[in-house]
Length: 170
Image 1 (cartoon, rainbow, N blue to C red):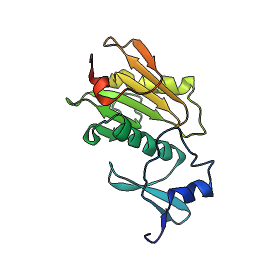
Image 2: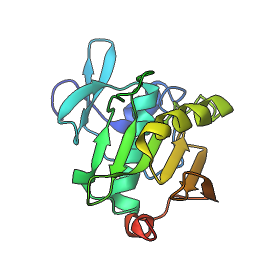
Image 3: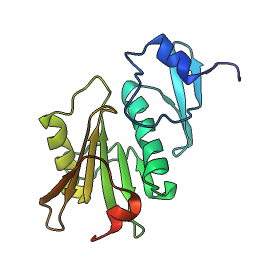
Image 4: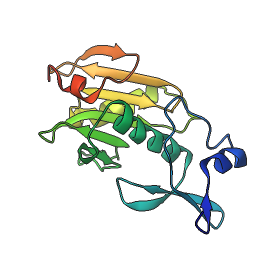
């Protein structure tokens, strides 16, 4: 083990309130301790990040997208700024093969609820992005919304469909 590196089980032992077990397949994370903080190496962004409770969920979500929905890594972007008047920053975006936004993911820390405020935040972001799917999650509670081409709510899913299924009827 490299100097300063930390096992995922050590983190949960240190504070399972901050880094709880989530209702998502756990990723193999490359972690290190930096002073009083723990950092995670983000494989998509190619950099070390402070492992906040929200980042803990985001890392699980990206792993889920890659392994359970077969979303291509090159079609996922993380923490992208929005251009609209209100600005904002999306947690995770999944694109179709033509580069259009297919999926908007809003991550919250496990201790936060998926509230009406969370839904409204995602809908505000989606007014600019026009993603067909929105996944709201804190790692334990998941709300997956599918929209029709006209922007109206089409269906609420219990679980996020696979990448190829999301592309159907686009």
